[in-house]
Structure formats: structure tokens, C-alpha cells
Image (cartoon, rainbow, N blue to C red; front, side, top):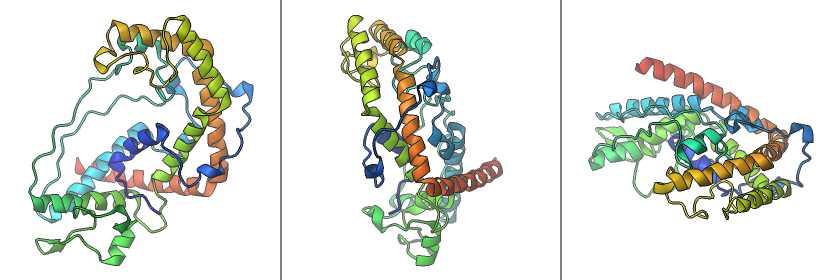
Length: 317
């Protein structure tokens, strides 16, 4: 069954999946823990430079920004048909982070400068969405209460089915509104186009399995012991802040910086990041071998989407 999630929330969906909420359709196929060649275990000084095998099939940070801009262009084009405009203020692109915090804070410079806070960004925020009347809301998002399973799964299906969410100014409103139309045109134009979230689901499954794997658990236990020697009690190397009694307002203060510095030092001492990366990479390689056809198809569709996005963004000025 196709996902009905807009690409605007692809990164959010990925974050939720990476928090451990996997259990998708291929989870049961992950067999015993794969072997890891000790020679393939890195000792990274910069976790952000690590590149996982499945990243070949996922948009990079700059590419995702381009795709999101293109979706806004397509949404505006759709809204214009009905006499409206869709113009949200642009947000400066976020700094590239890669896998910097995939396994928790790992950068000693960031830890010393801002603790568990955000490092190297101005924290730009999006202006609030302008007020919309009910008609404009219908055009943008479709009918309220529509269940995801009721929406067409591709733009070709929309055009073939003739379904709509009502009529505005004599024109049929696409199911799911202009937001959904923009998503389908960019990511799922044809009935045989792969679901763009399927690769992220595989990525999340490998992460979740690696997080529970014995070699990562042993490295995590050593990290915990190291933290205890430094006076900190924590079990979760990815998000230890609640266990450490830290609140967002103290992430960047002396208390947060002290804990973050110890955290990173212990990750270095135990090579937790390198071990975890090697184990997760092994799981990802297994999934690539198992789901090669899906991944190759997803890569082709992603390339098509990127070409479309480049043209749309260039034309929009």
C-alpha cells in the first residue's frame, strides 16, 4: 500500500522511524546479525563524514531542499488555477549535518562550544502561515476527514479516476488538495513509481536492528561505564539529556557542556560510533542485496524527481 505522506514531512517521518518506530513490512526478513570485518570498523574523528550504504538511494540534504522548493512551486501552480497563491517565506537552508548525530553527539568541538544544543546554525524560523478562508483551505489540503487510504496513490491514478474533493470556481479540486497534487507530481507521477518512503523504512529498520545488536550493546555498556567514571549516569548514548537531568534551557550552559564533553570523550574512548556505524552498514548491505530491484527503481525515480525539481526551481526564479 502506498504511503500518503507529503514529501514536506519526509525528513520528519525519517526522524520518527529512526527513533525506533520501525516494524514495517520487511522487518521480519532481517536474519541473524551479519558479520563485520574488523578492518571495516572506522575510528571516525568526524561522524558527519560517515556515509552509509543506503544513502546512495536517498536524497542528500541539498537535494532534499531542492525537492521541497520544487514542491512549493508545484503547490503554488495548483493554487493559482483557483485564484489563490501559495507563497511561504523561504527559510535559509540548514547547515549540512549528515550523520553527525545519528549515533548521538560525537563532535568534541560542538560539545565544548554548545553542549547538547544546536551548533553552527542561526536557528532561522519559518514565518507563520497566512490566514486562509475555508475555500482556500479546501483547495490547499482537500476535504477534512479524508482517510489516507481513500486518496489516490499516484498522479496517474488521480487523472484516471476522475475523483475530486469538490469544485471551486468551476474547477475540480484534486483529492488531498494542491499539497497532495504537488507531492504526487514530484514523487509518484506514475502507477509504477515506488513509494519514496520505502527506502527510508529500510534505512530505519537497519538502524533499529543495529541499535539492539550485541556488538553495539557491548560498546554502549563500555560507554556507560566510562560515563559513570566521570560522574554521569546514563544508558542512552543517543539522547542522554533527560537521564542527566538536563533541560533544553541547560543544554548549552556549563552543566550541559560538561556532560556533553564527557559524553563525546567516552564515545571516542570506546569507539562506539565506529562500531555502531560498521554494524549498521552491514545490515544495510544485507537489505540492499535483498531489495535491489526496489532500490534501483527508487534511485531512478529520485533522479527523475531531481531533474523535474531543478527545472521548476530555475523557472520560478
